[in-house]
Length: 230
Image (cartoon, rainbow, N blue to C red; front, side, top):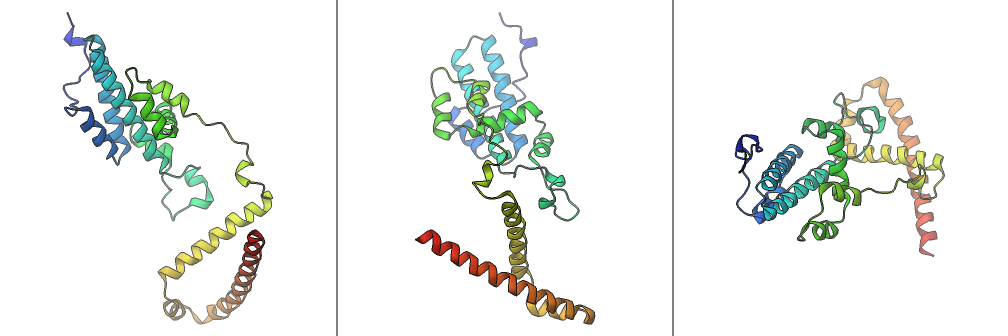
């Protein structure tokens, strides 16, 4: 006979009546904390089902938990990986950019849970479905093992480029992109009207330098495209 006093508190964590409904609800989650809540409910339900010796319910709860954790990982992956506020390339005014770690912390995920979610999300969708939609679904731990990606060397991302050239391209392209954004945001007439008298000469000198630089970049890009087409 079950000792109900020691069972997980599943009554306070209701789940949809069908597995399909749970799948749809999890797939529509837009916040990591919602996914964590789903995973916690499913884990509690699985514990209850094991004590009740309900194997089918155990398997269903495992599938729900896996899907919730995967969805959490997918949401975290939407946040660019990096050093956040310590990465000068990603500064945005006085507000530090949100990092994956901070998003996971805000949702109540431990470091281990964060890594697990990201690894489960790395598993290709077809492989993930095949691993859990079977009579004996894989555990979250096993799924995370499948999602571990081999560590790349520190220069793999360069794809053969010279490190100094890659650095220059990264920062130069970043400056060009910010300039393009400014073109969309500010009208030339508005900028000129706002210039103070002593800024006009400096603005003209900067324009000459920028025009010369852009013409050279445009010329070299055309040359490179022509070489690739040969």
